[in-house]
Image (cartoon, rainbow, N blue to C red):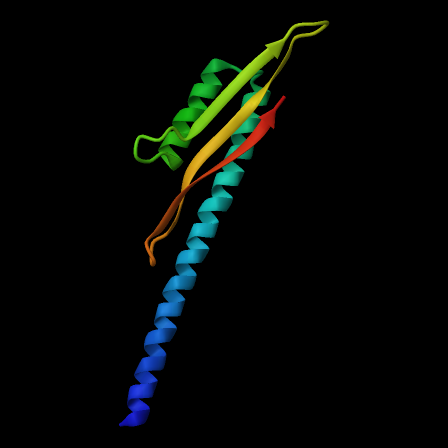
Length: 116
């Protein structure tokens, strides 16, 4: 009888650890997806020569993928400098929520990149 109880206890803790591990891996995948999306947005904005239509499209895509609770997912700030040639530069910031659902952990994270 004692060995059955130890066996079920071991299986229970093994399942808890498995669920916790899967949850952490899922959260890590979401963070990696956010980093890759930011790089794609920066590339699209630079390749379009800072087009307002492309920036709006990137913001809509980010809002669909990462925006929650009325939070603006993508913030794009651009500026220009006139001289011998017109140069644009700026900063792109992606806001997303990092969650570990099994333990109820949730926090807001932001990653940013310089464009130009």
